[in-house]
Image 1 (cartoon, rainbow, N blue to C red):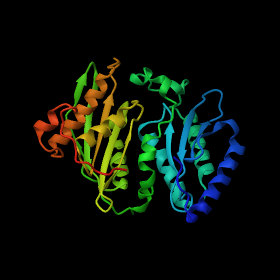
Image 2: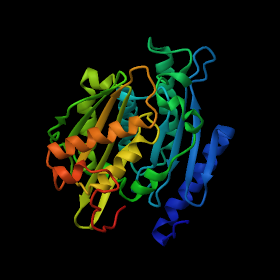
Image 3: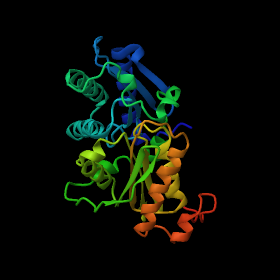
Length: 320
């Protein structure tokens, strides 16, 4: 359903229309309109090198108050992009937004990503088949779904996305706890947990974790978080698959079922060479549940140890 445009948003809407028209003219078939009424778009970006061609898909939602007050909501889909590289690219996009707050910045974002692709292709880490980098886990089974946009978390976070920009640099990194590992058929899973009350703390926790070379080298670092906003009686929540298709959404669903709040859980997976099928989701959720129990975020150990179907449902709350 399309948003109702208030008079104060008319200037932003006109700016969006003009920006989209310009981008469509500049990028041609690479620019794609997913849902014009909801202002959802995507663009395929490449480094234009035939020898080591790298591509990324930038998916975008334009909030009602973009560009005057809020940044675009975005997701970058690229099988080769993960770990510290993803964090570095995200930081550069955020820096661009802060530097040009109030301006139309999609063109700058696209060209920044293209610049990143060029640098990547010229580095010693460049590979011949970027579409298959690290495709050694179960995403091989879900390859057909790799480029299908998933805007479920975008819609969840659009209203609150500007909160990522509202907090200063004076916040401390929350303490991070590391849980016990689970190993199955040479794949190893390990959970990490941190208390968070702002989106900036989520970013700080991720950056701190990626400073650990072992964690940064994990095949996937799946995460989800829930932050309770008392003034709105609602939750700010989001998740990330990091290449393990659908794992982030399942992890967030677990946090919702357990009705935990003001906490972030990251599950690192080191792939061992043997496909686990659906068992991988079981191990990810078990890791997360175990560390939530250990750190006292669940009502009781017995309750948290039950299956999702038997776990006590949370009280009805308005969520975003």
